[in-house]
Length: 144
Image 1 (cartoon, one colour):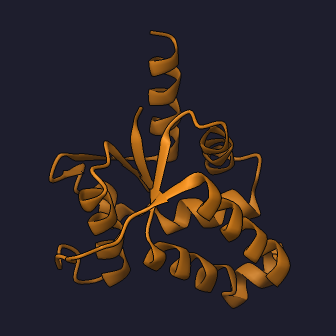
Image 2 (cartoon, helix red, strand yellow):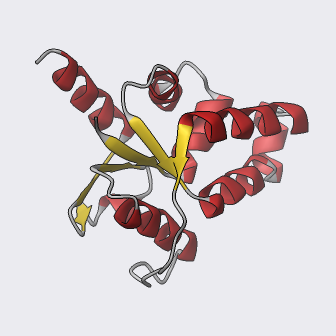
């Protein structure tokens, strides 16, 4: 089974736009189509991001819906305890937590919409792809 880390931006998008590609990925995670790997730092950053003023103003996620979403993620994921964080992306330190989670969790893929990560294409054997690319990968693995 594929091991996959979802970046914060994918998680945020999954909650606020459930029908979009990130929402479809979360639905697949609930169906255990792949093994979702997360770390406390990713969940904390997701909580903070969902409370950003511009997200609250436009999408109105409630504290309850945010906590329910994060609780459900904890149930379906394998939590990775990060031992070491490399400073690969100095301009966006939280990206380094996502990379560390993927490396230490032995992930096959890191799914992100973040150009700092996507520009790497891969890191220590972890392929970095967009949500659309990952959905195609899931489709191709099911048709084998």
